[in-house]
Length: 354
Image (cartoon, rainbow, N blue to C red; front, side, top):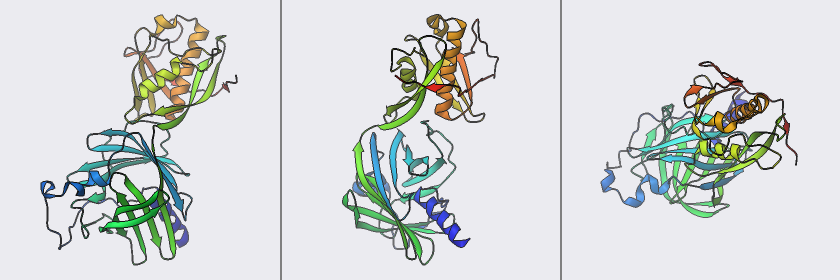
């Protein structure tokens, strides 16, 4: 039982979901207080942990299958950034905030396989990763009673990416159990070493790619005969701060084969796309010309609606989708939604084959 608990703790540490949020901070006695204006500009957190647009960082793992990971900044706004973390076990998002001289993880959600801007989410964590002044000896106490301290400003850390100069932060859990995190100028997080007695687990930077994030998704389209719908497993490139609405709109307007029909007519737009987490419902509002531009019979209209519902429901991993037209519940001569009513995702479709 003890071994099992230790293994669980290791996995949580590796994917960054340790519950060691920091509330109180205690500076060491030998550190004089400094204002930001007094600090060397090279010794500020944004230098050691920049929010990098359109950059995929890859890490090799040693000692545990979950130590390997990829990270990507999906959204950046002012002093907050949303990072997608992808490892062999799960995808998760972390929201980091740089405020009042500290870099803090304020939100984390696991099993996060879609793309959604969560930057305005209310903070549910307060885990300080770095704290100014960036000097050896600066330390703070986590809410679980562990000490986290800057233990080096000039560490040499060997990674598959190369040897890097790094700032070292050590979190000590007990006499034989501790974790060291390394941050390099202009890159950010470059390595983590977790030690528990003779056991050692490493996450080490291996590659930096200036690229967008490839996101796999399933898109549904009506067949040209108007009698059925099919799906394709597609891949799209998502840039940092990209528009999810425009990404999905583009896919629904541009089927990859002339055997498939558009889901959205060319002149129709998605006015708003919203995932209501209180009821776990995807809500999409289409422009008021949708029915006029669609100009379809009942069967074809039904297949278009089914394609929208299945695509959005699959993307957000929910069975309920609400469609409105210019703010009004969907209503046509063939289909009508009442206020609060939703369409249901169906899976009675087959994959399209050329």
